[in-house]
Length: 125
Image (cartoon, rainbow, N blue to C red; front, side, top):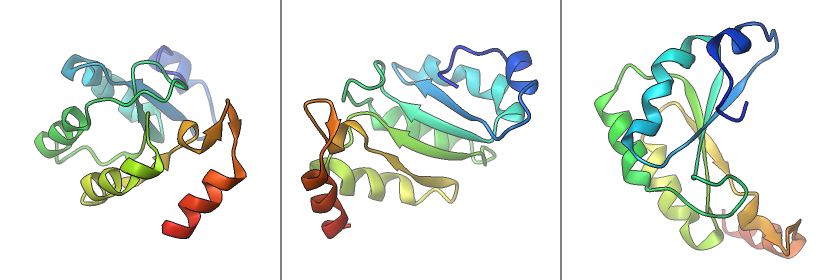
């Protein structure tokens, strides 16, 4: 789900659901309380998904610290590249419900998956 879907819509889908939330500011996370009971995973992303732009990770980190009862499994995306992957992993690995990262844009060359970048990342991690 790209984040605009309603709770009612999500409830009707019988398959596991990943719900994307674009983080612009603290208010961006308000929808979590409403949608959390009916989705299986969250994907926290930047303002413009697919653009390679990141979001302020402190916003999500603060939310997770202030909401220890948030146990839904989640991924982080948005502007994750080889150069900042370690920082992202260190920042979020301390949360037991962190599953991993989506680094699609960070593994692309001219909008296509780049075998060289993928191999480079795989070698280091």
